[in-house]
Structures are given as structure tokens and as C-alpha cells.
View 1 (cartoon, rainbow, N blue to C red):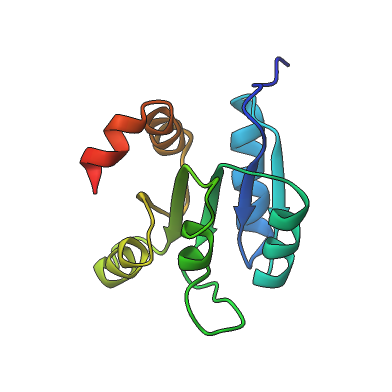
View 2: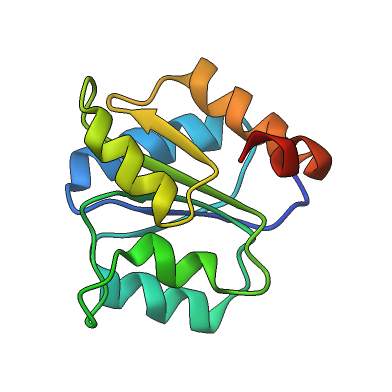
Length: 131
């Protein structure tokens, strides 16, 4: 499989099954993937390796109590912050967007939704107009 030379995508999900599902999809699309199942593990990975794209569960919070999405949004290298959460819960999408997510993907995340979100990251001007 040809791997994309765009750096890894971070997947931060508290449930390993959800993390591995997103991992599989991203690998099928040719991305390197790093998986974390806790906020602490997420931040440790981010300190070790620059990642410009992340798929993060809305419910993960940093040690400060703020959404992990907010912490990652403040990182200078972050180009695409995708949030994932339960379907049909508008308040979760609102929370994700307020925390800085560019895109909200309801679970289970499908390859079409993920591919569309990642295409947006290839066109930075599209992100600026999407907020």
C-alpha cells in the first residue's frame, strides 16, 4: 500500500473499538495513524510527533476540564481538527464546533465522511470559509 507523505493522523477515542475502526479506515486511505485512548496519551503523542490532522472524540477532556479539542486547536501545527461523537445529538456538534473542530463526524465514522473531511484539509481556503 502506498502511504501518503503528509504525516500521521491522530485518532483520539476512549473506546478502542471506535479507535481501531477509524484506524482501519485511515490506513485504507493510505495514512499513517497514531491512536490514543486518553487525553494524557493524546498529549504525550502530540509532544513526541507533529501531527497536523486529528480525529478526536468530543467527550475527551484535558486535565484542566476543558475539551481536548480546545487544547489541540491551540497547537500551531494543527490544520484539521475533526470531532466525532454520537449521531443525532446536535448539542454535541455545537460543543465540538465551539471547542474548535472544523468538522463533526457522527459515529460510526464512514470512509466517505472521513475522505470528504480530509479533502477539505488539502484546501486550506475551504476551511476558512467553513467556520
